[in-house]
Image 1 (cartoon, chains in turn cyan, purple):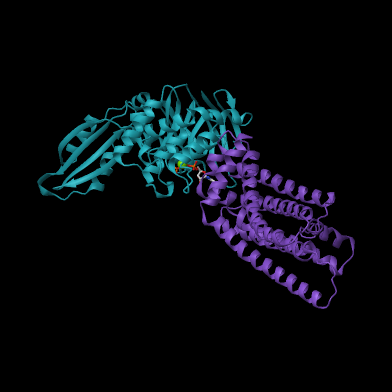
Image 2: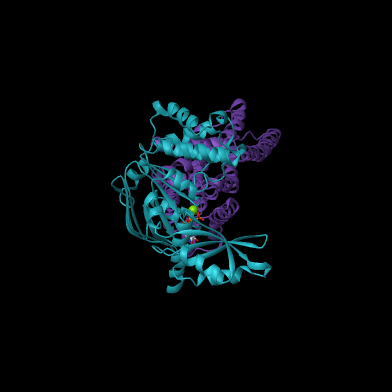
Length: 324
Length: 255
Ligand SMILES: Nc1ncnc2c1ncn2[C@@H]1O[C@H](COP(=O)(O)OP(=O)(O)OP(=O)(O)O)[C@@H](O)[C@H]1O
Ligand SMILES: [Mg+2]
């Protein structure tokens, strides 16, 4: 449904998106994940024909964004980062306007407006001026305008930002329900959102794709690596500092990262991650004991998508730094 | 075509739901009313004088009231036009709704025409106020309505050109005030250009004078429809709208 090949977008001073390629199948929900400034919004703006790519191609439903933008636009519903609202309009009036703009036939317009208002729970504010709406309601109206013409493809830039927890859950449900009949790309910083809503994730960092896979595969991919929670205590009340322990643990072969968590009653808690395919628990235990400390706890913890995300984007950052 | 109407209706609605339109109409009504009753007062006093002196030379309402008033409207328009166009694109750029317009299956030219026509309509509704005043003349005299009609056509054409230029300027910034200020500067410049013709007769002065919008209006105010003036205004309209289209295009590339 969506095919992006070698997409690059240069601004005057920097490259926002660099040689990005991915594909999205019909009916899929894909999460676009990346830290601030990664290039998520830029990629979406190219896909929606808001701006042309500097090089590379992007097609939506078989239509090229450069050569047939009109056809692409007809098939896309887009919720930009800031919802594109007219404060002087009433909600219902606004949705009607967008419907007309998107080419919804007059005979269906009223029904569509009713339907999307219902779906995005804005029916009770239909008569309210948009300037008088709260941030969350604006976001919902933004979502409603994106689906008003029942588009094949939905592009949602941070659709849950600014919503309350209940609304976040409802919006995610709504997005999940829209999948199947719609192909959806959504961008987010929130990892649980991707885990809950998306089938596939594309992780992007500094304008490059660093990983693209199904959510399951991506979690599995680093399953070989393990994360271990360790609690260390000094024997006989001797002083013991976190940096000292951290340094010792980092020297163990196979350890990729040691994170100091907390100190409670002079007991230090760490989380230790291994390199892929390395088992470190035995070495960990031995090191702690040989150093003359008490080992209070040693427990395997799963590596969450969040940690994978950090690992991927961190290594990419290191690689990027090396090149400069 | 339908898209032009959709954009047009939206613009008209937002003009009249903001204070801008009402402020413009009120200001214009006050200014024009002042000019009008001044002109009528003058006309009446001159009329009385000529009667007392017994010289019954015919008093021409068209020549003495309507023509100078139309000239005044033409100049007052230069000051009001920036206020009409300044928000057209600048506001959309500032609030992010440009992203909605440019990603909808609507051609740029349809958006531009919709907005420009809305601006012209607002200007036309200001002209309608002048017609209200002029109807007073028809109640008390019998001025010739044909030259008046030509005058109104001229006003619309002139405003159309300047509004198109203002629309273009509005695409170049996110800031309404900047757009308004720049448009005002351009309007002023296009007005004073004719002054060079007063002291200079070289070819360059003629070219500059030719570009003056107000001097092209003079024949209209007398009821003379000259194709070269129509062509001038039509070119100005085309140029303004063309630049607007180019500007939107380049906006995408730079965005
Ligand atoms: N109009 C612009 N002109 C110049 N540079 C820009 C422009 N818009 C974005 N950039 C740059 O392009 C890069 C990618 O920006 P983009 O907005 O796509 O990031 P993002 O992934 O959406 O970030 P966020 O999570 O903060 O929304 C950034 O370095 C940004 O500074
Ligand atoms: Mg963004």
